[in-house]
Image (cartoon, rainbow, N blue to C red; front, top):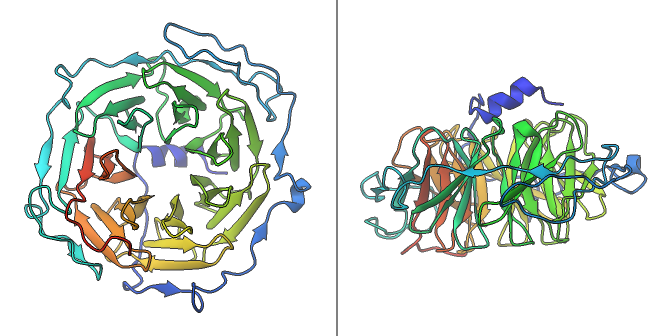
Length: 434
């Protein structure tokens, strides 16, 4: 399992990765679709076909509410917590209003023509560079040191993002207006992965409080304690089964939580450190294992199968379902974007900027993949055939992390080092559909 010190270094942004570039050529592991990566490592045998689910009594939790809390069934734990899973009201409070609702320092604007032409590595032409044309990037500063980490389009049509340093969740319109920041004042809880739930709420992770939080769009929250003591919940996604699924890297779990807060734990390979997670098109949940150097899938009943990534030490990080029905993931130290079919066949595509540390990744509305480069300071587009176009972020050393498709069809991302929310405008982009 990963040490708490190492995990805190990750949260604080001090990952040191020796990334290497493989020369910009596709690393193909076999004919046709990339070749067979080798036999899948099936983790079901040790669990008797039940994915090593850790079952327990599952007594109802007594959660206590405060003003504005979301009421609902008490959080039952289906895991090995021995009973009470510790559901409680989050006590979130709204941060000081930014006044007229605009982002506190006002948006900064940078067209691609001002920040330099996009670095083209063989993808289709990016269109005419200019104000609000393809590749134009706008940045909206947040007040103070917030360390925004992950971002998602919420059920209300706004952008929602977590603040790792601020222990808060922010709400922003597609016009860049900061509406609210909801802060947990009780402790330095942190805030990492966030997802839109099947219940019309937001769900996010408080890693230092070991909590999964259900948050209404009005800002009322309820926390559900992970049953494993001193756990490290990381990222969360809405599953294809109507539940939420999240990774817990310290004890190597991929866990299921119902909209009512019932948690069931499932074990994956020891010392694998599951991290990014996404719903697959096959009815399963897929996840990336940083230290295990694998991509895994788990069925709704908890059967786990893991596939080794071809590149040694690739550090598979974030993961998404691609527009082609395959699973795509970033290789933080491998400096590649990986693709794996539902049968476990891999392809890997190099990122042009050396040691760029590809990070967040999402499937775009244009039929391409979009990802951030933490050290390369770029937002990049990749076609399903592996052609890449990179767009420089105007602010240096911004450390972009999570990325999502906004309600406006543009690509929204967070800048952890500079505490800004960015948007890359897709207007005028050609080459859609890869």
